[in-house]
Image 1 (cartoon, rainbow, N blue to C red):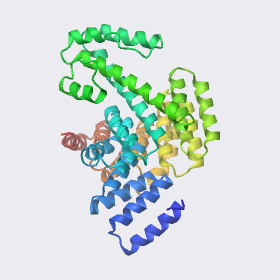
Image 2 (tube, helix red, strand yellow; image 1 turned 135 degrees about the vertical axis):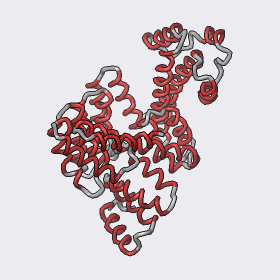
Image 3 (cartoon, one colour; image 1 turned 90 degrees about the vertical axis):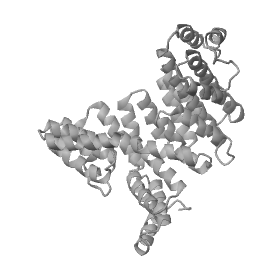
Image 4 (tube, rainbow, N blue to C red; image 1 turned 120 degrees about the vertical axis):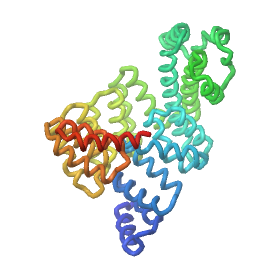
Length: 401
């Protein structure tokens, strides 16, 4: 493991399990070796087997991390809730799961995680600053969306938009009006105290305005700190590329990524991250190309395979998708995402019975997954089997309580 020979480590751990099949530590270590090889679904299976034998916080976090990577957000969500409640003070655990919060559209959880990691000397400070900036930026989008639906919001919305259109960092122009309109508004509140007050008064429009402003200010502040202390940070360059893409300067963004790949070949995820940038911009053909290139470099990288599958769905290339996934659904412990996507392709290609067969397999392996039962319910209705559809509906409702 220390030498990076993960296939060799996997082989040794499997031999060890032949002698002691009920060793949670060995199962967890096997999961780590599989994880490092990119074999996410096999790693998930190993972690789950280990946790059935013994509760190990780090293994719990690694399981959540892999579920996020493989688009099993429903499976990751309860794990993250438990981690936030029980293990939020352990840096190694936070480091593993912190990226999941943004995947789950939980920017406040992400802010909390990266604020903690920023105080941890063992975690790269420039990475923590950039991820914290992204978290605050997402929080700003979250609060602005709420503000857009709130009552008496026109002054606040126009003030924020005017600051944005002028390229100004100061969106505080309506603070005096906010203070007059709300007893809960205080211009000197920091972000965490403002969030706590908003939890008690979630409908207060002035607080939503304050939190939108504070989020965006904090996002810019983290970038400024990173630029001052780590001007050559590859994570800072990566963020600048993402901002360029958001502003419509796609060619410049791609050029920055290509420069990063040459300057920092030690960062293995840049090609994948480029695909994620295209995904964010809904440039699905370009995203597909990037994920396929990453998969060609790392054939066992299930994370990239899952994104190839997603891109093919978005492009409506159903036969290509079904061919791509045919081998994956026949593997031991087939990935949930692969079975769900294969079922989608089969149904779209007028093969609903084929979709049912695959989802029945998924149901055996992932009995607590609501999506599987919901999809089966629809397929049974489609194929004229109301009795089975009713059973799946009852299971779905039971899991939804």
